[in-house]
Amino acid sequence: MREVIFLEYSIGEFSRLTNVGIHTLRYYEHEKLIEPKRNSANRRRYSDEDLAWIAFIRRLKDTGMPIKKIQQYAQLRAKGSRTLAKRMKMLSAHRETLSGQIQTLQEHLARLNEKISFYRREIQRMEK
Image (cartoon, rainbow, N blue to C red; front, side, top):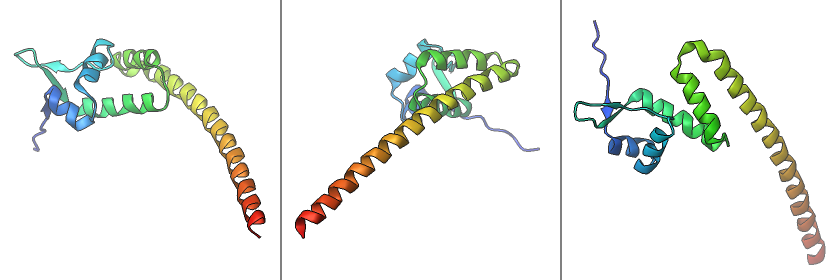
């Protein structure tokens, strides 16, 4: 039988591993986004599961999800698998928002490319 090893990280180690500042980690804890376990000396102890969770929080932030929505998601996550449908609905709605933003950005990019092409043609015409 294989023994499972659970790694734990101090807040400093966790900060280095995730590239998230200690103050930000404490803020996330204050906002109930992450709830690290505590050791017998009441020091925060982060796990590999926390590593995956913080990466997901960062992805949600990077995609523009507001902290309040991430908090709602975190609260649902804390309640376990009975909230899977609600979490999926939240992520689906966020995906729709992102898709709209991407489409808008693609339209802006196309207009910029058109303008750059115009300038390129004009410059080449003037050089002849």
